[in-house]
Image (cartoon, rainbow, N blue to C red; front, side, top):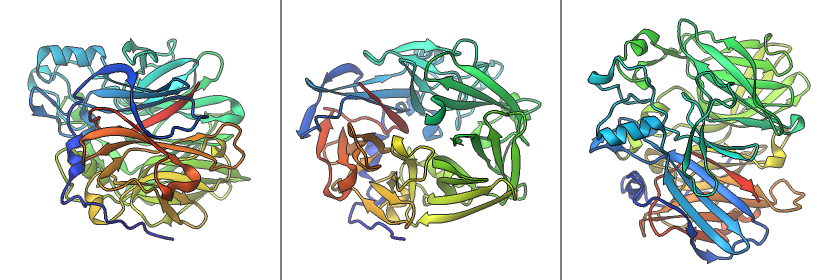
Amino acid sequence: MTTATSKHPTALSPGWHRAFRGLTRSHGFEPLRVEGRVPEDLRGTLYRVGPWTFDVQGRPFQHWFDGDGGMLGVRFGPEGVTGAARLMDTPTMLTERRAGRRRYGAYGTPTPLLHKLSNARKNSANTSVMAWNGRLYALFEPCRPVEVSPADLTSLGETDLGGVVAESFSAHPHRVPSRQTAYNFGVRYGRETTLDLFALPDEGPARLLGTLKLPGATMVHDFIATDRYLLFFLPALRLDVLRMVLRVGSFSGNLRWKPGVGSEILVVPIDDVAHPVRIPTDAFYQWHFANAYEEGDRLVVDYVHYPDFTTNQWLGQLAKGPATTEAQGRFHRAVVDLKGRRFHTEPRADVSCEFPRVAPSAVGRPYQKAYVSIHTTTAASHGHFDGVASVDVASGHTTVAALGREQYPSEPVFVPRAGSRAEDEGWVLTQVYDARSDTSHVAILDAQRLGEGPVARCHFDHALPFTFHGGFAPT
C-alpha cells in the first residue's frame, strides 16, 4: 500500500475555505473558456449538486449539509463547452428566502423557536443528481426528488415519481446493469423506523419493491447493489425520535453513537425483499460505497470506512474553517459470507479519502480501479480534499492526479471513451476550486495518465461552492 504525498498548502493556510460562500452569479448555459483540448469523443453533460448557501440573512447554518442546493451543468458538444450554475427553488427554499429569516430546521441547524409547531420539512435538494427516463432530478435524502430542466437547470418542482415515494428518497440510487434497473431507498422515522425500497427500470414507471423494519432509529446514507442483492451497512447510530418529534435540537444533534449496539449488515434479495439476511458486527461507520460483486455465496464490497461517527464533526466544521479533527476515511474491502453469516473488513489503501466512484463497465463486477477524492498530507486532512487519485483495489497503490498548487477538487466522475475496451479507458471529470484565481473549473483527466495532469480545463468566470455528488449524461 502507498500513501500519497504532496507539497500542496495545508489546512493551516486554507485557500479552499473561500469556496464556502454562496453562489455569486446564477446563470443558464453559456460558453466556458477552455484551456487545453477537450477530447472529441467526450459528448454529453456533467451535472453536480451541493449546498450553495451558508446562511440566511447573515445567520449561518450549523453544518455543511444545511445549505440550499445548487446545480452546475457543463455541456460538451461539437460547438464547444458551455456551463450553467443555478440555485434550486423548492417551495420551502423560496418561503425562507422571501421571509428573510430561517423558518425550518435542517440536518445540523435546529428549527427556530417560532416555527417549532410546523411539521414542514425543508427540501434543500443539495446532495446528488439523478438522470432517469429522460428526466433530471436533484436529490436530498429526507425528501422527495426535485425535477430540474436540463435546458437551463431551473427547478420544475417536487415529485413523488407517480405516487411511489411516500416521504423520502435517498440521494444514492444505484443501477444494476444486468437488470436494466436502478434501485434506491427511503427511511421513514416514527414509532418504528422503516426502509422503503424502490425500483426504477430503464423503461417504465418507478415501483415500490417493499418496506422493511430497521432494528432502531438509525441513519442510512448510502447502499450498494449486486446482481441479486441490495446491501446496507446499518451503523451504530440511534436517533432520539421523541426529541425530533418535539423539534428539540437538530437531526444531527439528536444522533448518538452507540458502539455497544454494534453495526448490522443487511442483505436484501432483490427478488425476495421480505426475507433479508441480517449479520451483526462490530461498530463502524460509512458514508459511501464504491462497488460490490458476487463470488458465489460471498459478496465483495468496497467502501470508505470510519472507526466512529466523528466524521460528522469534521464535515460540520469545514464550512467555518479547518476542522479540529482529521478526516478518518480509509478505502476498505469487506467480504460478506452469506452462508456462514460472517462479515470481515480490512483496509486497502492508507490514504484519507472519500467519494469513491468506478467506471460504469466495472459496476457489479470484479474490477481494478476506484477513483476517489483524497487528502495528500495528514495536515491537509483538517480541510477540504486537495487531490484526486485512482486506487488499485488489489494492491492498494494510489496514483495521484497532478492538478497543481491550491487546486481543490470535488468527487471524480468517470466517463468511458467511445468504444472503450479496457476498464480505465476513459476520462475522469472533477469540479475544481482554484484558490489562486478564486474561480472554478471542470478538469478533464485521462484515467490512464492521471499523473500527467488535466488534458483540458473548462473555466467558469466565477467561483462555485463545492458540490457533493454528480453524474454524466451522454448525448
